[in-house]
Length: 453
Image 1 (tube, rainbow, N blue to C red):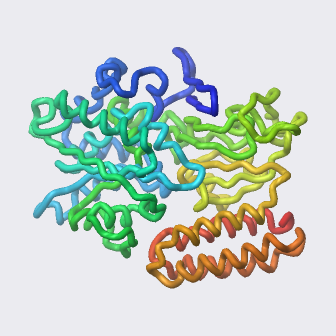
Image 2: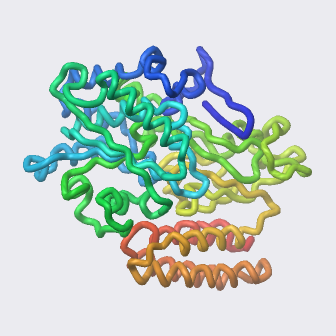
Image 3: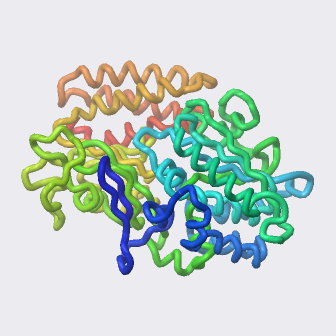
């Protein structure tokens, strides 16, 4: 596993059984050097892809079981197949869009990839564009990611200068142009249809589904939209094959995932691990346990972890109380899920979601009502106001959350129930995922913490 805290980094060494995919080259090569990327095996997957048919490529991705790493977990190969086979494609262009507008609180995995191995992202985009028959791609990057923007731009320039981008790539009939666009700070533009509106030069308001991007996407054309981390997995799948990819992770959630862990742990940072790793392992082994009794939460190395069924972060440290998995749009879970394998299906069975892989850890000193208030304030701030259920509902949820936080513990259940009913109404009637998101944290709080609150 590759990890980065405030002052330390760690990567796997030769013979290390831990698997790296998206961060395979992180810390090993100069991210600005295309030559070093090639020496590390870069663009071999692209060469392999160009010797095969597009149908063989997206079928390989389907067989691999790769799911979108942006949060929804939709099968990546199925999305490619639907876009490639779109009946609208015969009468116009197709597009590939890389969603690098990372705005979920606690999430910085895409930034880690773009700053440490930007050419891998470009290679994944190239293979995907070949698979669906696209000749134009866009990379939509969060405007605040200055270093990510600089390195992606450098990688694109490198690829143009060496023939990996432009006309007749590697002396084939395949051509691809890549354009970089910058976001302007809207969390909502991380949602794929709202992102398309922004790319078209419009205000970042959500579209109504259906139609979906595979049928009617950018400029009305079939469009494949994937997250940065998803594109970073494509070269591995094509180079090593679906069978090898499925050996990593879980049967129903193959591959690795980058988790970005913050909060009350000794060593916060980003960590690529196989899916199926437990929350206890991430807290105790990867992050050094919970913060110490006299620690302010800074990145220090704790004593040995506390595996074997004991409470996470024990042995003289603060105790684990809860974790918000998936960012603000995620689930608040208790120690009941510490030993549940982290995967798309396994978490869903417990009423939780993997989401973007953000994990914010809270120890026993935190008032979870205050954390819910912060989440509701975030949604109110980020609501575009287009639809009434979200515009009014997020404001009402903040008011209720303030009441929740002001009441003494043990007397908050009624307010939490009222908030959940309001969020359920928003879930049924809002236009886009933002209005549907508060229900996740509130229902999980009801399930795991109703007595504690």
